Length: 234
Length: 256
Image 1 (cartoon, one colour):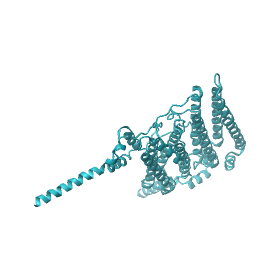
Image 2: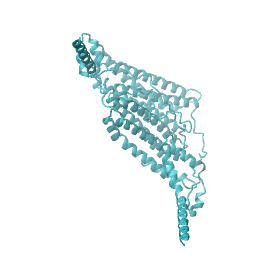
Image 3: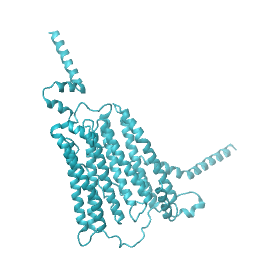
Image 4: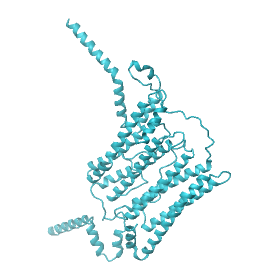
């Protein structure tokens, strides 16, 4: 009787081990190839997101929703900047320098979004454009009033850039501190995002402070005109 | 005597503190700003608004007092200029605004398609690139229409609500052919919407000749070529799919 129990235990342990190993691509191929029905094989490789033969490893589970939130933030900000550029492109504003600045930021955010999409999908992640995961990496879709004057727009942009930098930093924190770490994604952020964002935050804070100083005159119209001309040449 | 020295010392300390207080406000302000800037909701904006409304520049230098009395003026007056050149009519303007949103929606839908075909388990990089490119183009179309409105003297107000961040109707596809089919449908929808916009803008009593010419010559031109391109690709792919299935799609993707 005792030996029977021991046998049963060993058998069940083996079964358990086998079940665990089924999470490996190779095993699934073996079982698919052995199966008589053709659909078992095709079912595996027709791009179902449940496929075991995927590219997911390291900390992708915990970082995926954060990157998704961050992609949505970049897209939201991209359109916000586009409208800010539009505002300064009206004949009443007529500030081509400011327009150029914000159009540049808009294009950058859009291109960065595509870059991030490529990155997260290369790691076996997916992108959900509809659900907005609440995270420090996400931004509100409520758009602030963009019909603002020149100095305010710089302040708005500076805040935006800081928000985006904070978002990337948050994703990086998750990549380096979650239970399962993800050095690959952390490195990607360090290389492709954080330095660029530090630069643009710095640039905008410089602009905001310069313009604020130049505007400390009774009639700042000439200061703004000259500053806009300066921005055009950047 | 000791008392006297002590009281002098005390005086000196008090005086120094007072001087310190005197010098401090500026520095304190800076720290205040940096403290609040952790707050994600437009802290610098708020700070500036406050300054704009009621802060008379506070320097302690007596020599500059005169200059410092005025407020920091941030918004300049918009001067009166002739308005007769603003000749776009409301129906056409709102049609344009609608079309801009349509283009952005299409861009989003293409982004979702690109993201799907870039997935590891889908792995169709040719399709993905094609759709990312299309997403960029649609966004470009939208922003060119926005620029057109600005050129015609529009968008001096109501800019903030011009574009809403859309959601996408679909995020997964059965195969490449079904995505190409959806892309073609999307282009058909955009083309129809442009035709409708043209009809609105050239209708009596006021014909927006220049805009209609632009929409016909540039936008319809691109739409029609785009549709033909997609239709050709879809046909070629479907021919191969009927007998060669996955292999057909695999090869097709590599040549996109």
